[in-house]
Image 1 (tube, rainbow, N blue to C red):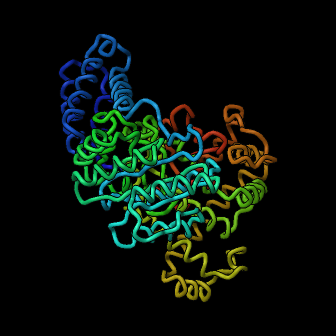
Image 2 (image 1 turned 120 degrees about the horizontal axis):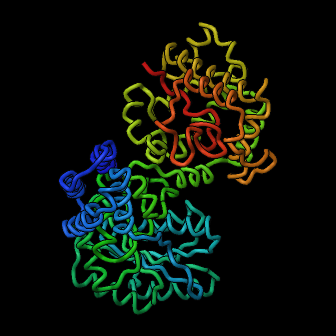
Length: 518
């Protein structure tokens, strides 16, 4: 999401930050490029125009031109205006109403309303501990009601029993009544869509709204429709009155123009974004975090949240204890690789790491991408229990068998073993010898984040012995792990708080398999 925009804006703004002084002409030239980048990302013209006007107004002021680092000031102004354009505050689905709270889903056919209904229901069930009832009001599309029923079975969420021949308005009334009788907190109405906006559709939506009296009316729009999604939002808002937007297929849209335009044009907040096909792939829309991501500043908060959601607390605690003793076998490596997959793979993680957005292509070029992670997991799974616990057993004949079982070759197996050896050495350096308590200290940060306890508190990296940190840095360099220049913002060169170096939450040994520098 936002890849192309991230790339363009990154190169434009980097050109500014590297300069000692900025003239008005420099700022104007940069803003012309920003304007072009936003238009290419399919952001609505009126939005682009007002955005660049506001930035120019602030950026050519004396405060910027005379500041110590004018380039950085301009970047800050662009960031603040970007947050303003996306909507200053994040806005989640509002459940502040008498039960059952009615949520009405509207949108065109094929925008992903039914799947999004299931995703929201699952999110409210798991996160808010709400009892949810889903009801399909789509009597036109073949098997639409059956599709929602199947999603209910899949996610273990109640759906309204199907009665053939009922009108959408009658189904809406029955759903609200059933939710009252069944003690449900929330009822989600999945309405019918059309291939285009027409009068009968709008009359039906207005009638359902009158009958069900929804607290939230969420417009589901496909992010890939670009500017047309903005016109769609306007039409629905004028006729039905929407309270928020849900953008689907954000993972497939490298431009992100719809997301950037919607809030500015309609004044309605983007509440949720669909970022994948899984039922759990639904994220809250945080304007500030999205702006950080677009400008290549990373999104550590979302990364830690994702880690907290996907990490199995017991497994993480067991691994932390193991690592604290300096032990790290191939089972642990497989677990970390699987963890990376759960968190969105290499690309997803890199996009959230400050200063690392551009690393994704470089890593792929060096042969380390999501496909290579799958191959590495396949290699480990082709080993016996004894081999995973003791990699020294792996001689030529065993490697030949593992290569045949995993569809790889001996070279890839050797590469994996080398990577494991490097990481195991790092664990030993951190867990044993002079730095005995260091790993335990550092794992404490992760443990407290995940609510595991018992592994110490968040360490103060500044109080660690410089020699210990230096030794660790050398180990990391030997593994080919290089932190971004100057370290991560606000963290010096140390990495993530409580994780002791440029590592990912829950992935104790850094980026597994990162290639060495040439």
